[in-house]
Length: 450
Image 1 (cartoon, rainbow, N blue to C red):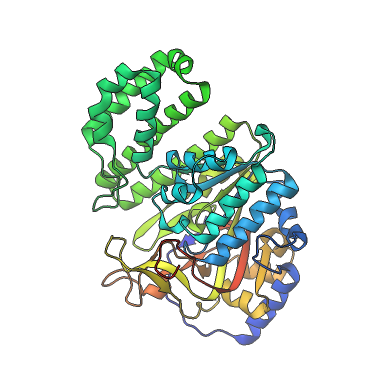
Image 2: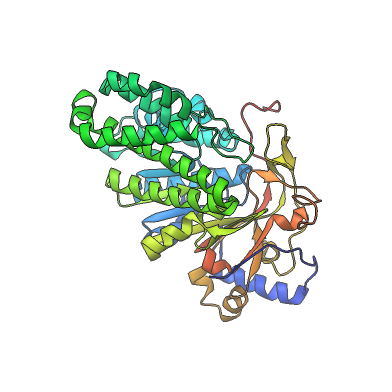
């Protein structure tokens, strides 16, 4: 699959050619009316039709800090739940930590905002995501337990949530074993902290010992664990140990082979965890909420690292056409991100991008005139001229939680604006795109403005 490194392009292009492509996109695409999650579903029917046969639906986002993306994803998930009976939601968040969110939306126990804060990511601690979680709880309330939407994280970047879950589990399942393992549990717990390589800050030797000893215990004492707790508690505790192993593998890959290797481990772990969730819950469909770079079918390309297989590429390999990757794009407005470098001293604030690159699909969407639009690439392929244009690498917006600024990530690297426009053969990377003309920043709930 073709996936090239983003490059800075001219901001001029042939207006006539753009207008022609825009007209063809208008014929192939569908305009949506609103991002409001509470609005009527009627305009989403074309989106729903495109997603109807997918077993896994990846909902991306072109930035981690855009309010309209979160609202639109909420709206689409609501459609899938209410109109198509979907009952499994997965998110780019650490698996053990999201057990509190599942407990809230399924059983109404705990506090939604506290559970979101426990995911470690400011990007989910927002007004829009909180509204989504509260809607899930409202939908689930009073429904039969087996007809409620389950909430899972699939990430494995931290050890702390897994250690805390295992400690609590062992207190009931085997107090003597817990006492024997206490020192290793404590040393494995990264307490939500990262080291200077942005890796889980755990003790390697103690973690390896914990994985070995507790892994053996799950094999040898499983029936006793189930008798002392429950089948579900035992299964989830065992998965927490696997998450610790995945976080350990990611750090080992980073220290041994570099950033790209750690990206490979992370996305492969997320794909594994999502497949595990589907099998464990015995549900035939899931919707996945994550960044475009993760849900795309090709590769995850960072601003300062070589491309690596994406979560979506693993899902595409396993599920084929049963996986639908829906990416996002935007023209202008603003978004929230951490400035310059991903460190505690970086500034979380509002940013904007320059005009999109020449020959980008962003420009064609903009010329088509709609404020919100959906393009299914299967439909676009029926238009020969548009299909031919899309067969070449084209840029679209791409930014995670970090904005690098006009001088780029560091000296001698590409311009910061170009770093936030990824060039891909779009129909290979995504099955469809959603376009938002004007964006506003996500509303982080503990920010001074809110």
